[in-house]
Image (cartoon, rainbow, N blue to C red; front, side, top):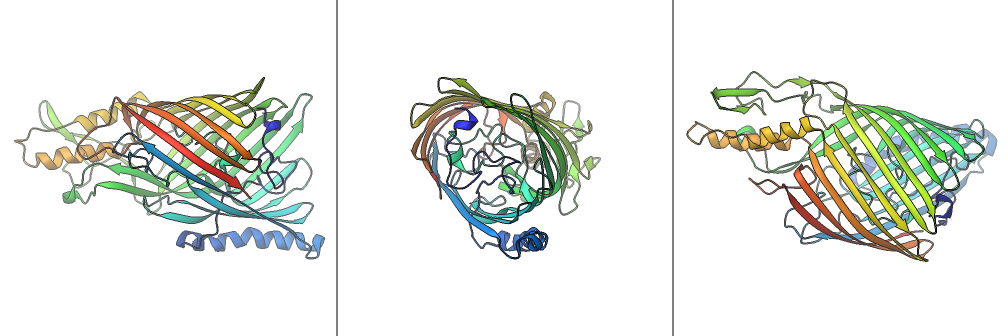
Length: 473
């Protein structure tokens, strides 16, 4: 199905919003008015662009602003055939937490050139596995100086993916869930800053250039298999509060048959509390043939090499192409690099997916292959730390061996792929039901898996069944 043939939703610009056609960045609703601590903390920020829009638009409108309210929701269930969790929530008990989300969005047009958008979202917490959070996903003012230029300032979506703007709105695509192997580059998808879009009409299509600059706070999740009270390391999930400063450009070519997209993004990440980030683990030799990696400052050793921040460069490409006769091909790829070669504990990786879809009246079945793999140096460092042990006769051997596993868990490393077969069924232009079977193959390691204490999850397969109902209103 070509982009032009996608389901039209009940408010303007929802699925196919375009810099030329909308004052808002993309009029995709992805929020819910839940007054939670994180939402209350965002209210002040939201008022800034809205007030700016009022000030800019008032002379032209004399108070005659045009407001519109829209919303969406998804109730999703997922269940695997394993007792340990995959993607934070999915195990053999089943869960509604992974895919359930809801939201509302308020759009305001103050003049032909000035508008604003505020969007609230309820979804699983980014820093707690057992809570839902209310957040402001969008809060920006937009200004169109000419028909071919659009400037937005405030809280917006990072344009990392083909489905960046609408990935929370399940009605706008056919997948039961967008492939995690690709859609997990960043633990957060919003930024606070400025973006600029411009476009050129060509003979056979349109060229769109988007650029952005800003910063955001995200929570990076780590799963620690073993608790080590002696060095204050608790078992289970732990979160690092990180600030990302970034910028990027994305070039898109749109035709009647599809979209071709390429982007280049750079970011600097640092811990919000000012603590240094580990760059590598030095090896401490106890005797010829064995020793340990100093993974914590409390362990004897020369000290852990650290840096104030880690700079990443991410290159992305994507295509969404109609093949005719109801067939559609969608694919994305990303390469993540770490600019500082001395930083060994960082996620250098290749990731992507390719999917073939077929429209059959209200049904759209699809098959998807996805893969995510860290560079060999990253995987080898994980393996060396994870498998390192000292003999039981060494004083403190139990503590040292447990610390090695905990140190390995602090390295985000991936070696996995998946096949998915699924379908969507359009109940109406504003609602869909979806079902999917996915088989995930874990190679050497995957930080998307919560391994049980003292164990390794490698060379295993995980089967996941997903069911969902989504709507817009």
